[in-house]
Image 1 (cartoon, rainbow, N blue to C red):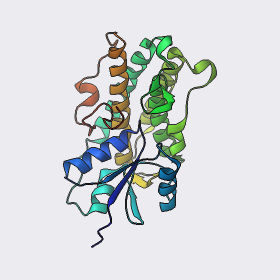
Image 2: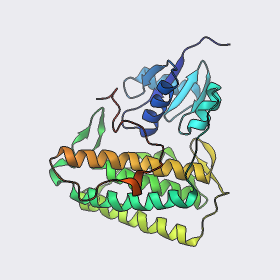
Image 3: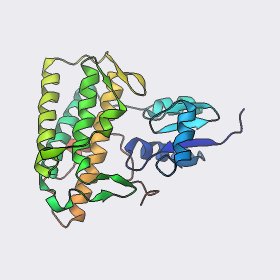
Length: 254
């Protein structure tokens, strides 16, 4: 058995990274935390494995993408398997989350839109609601036969769309496309191409739902932190049964 230390490559603002950290901690597994945004050497170490995205868990030269905890459990030899909500319920969660996120996005003051996120000077408060839309767009692209790429998550609103109303409109448009996809008929047995491998549709849909939910929690937290009462609060219709991280933000970032 190898004695090489376990390494977790992550970056601030990454919800899957936070979830992977919490998973390892819950199972009492020690690991070296490597923030790839902290240094060129950290990113080079990730790329030396043959990976270009995070989170990644590695031991020696072997690694696994940590977007799916089932994959992490297999890599670590743990007897663990996720329990998922039914596909129809996950679809309802996504639609409800998009409605709440649109209302919260419109509520953000213009003056707060470009406030940087802790640990990510290249991301702002206003990027969070746009990111929510892009998470779902990535799922839809994969469900329609294209692929979910890491670049979906790197997109930012530009030009006239880079305002609270602009990103809220992007969420509204995405919600309409998601509803149209649902109306066309869902094939739960479908496999989707993603940047972390070919995955079953239910798993990618679940990740889409909790990924959106986590950023919606952050958006609601920001609104409250600005001294505003959220126009739409998150509750059981949006969050119940989703495998969310415990923390709203990563404590390692602040």
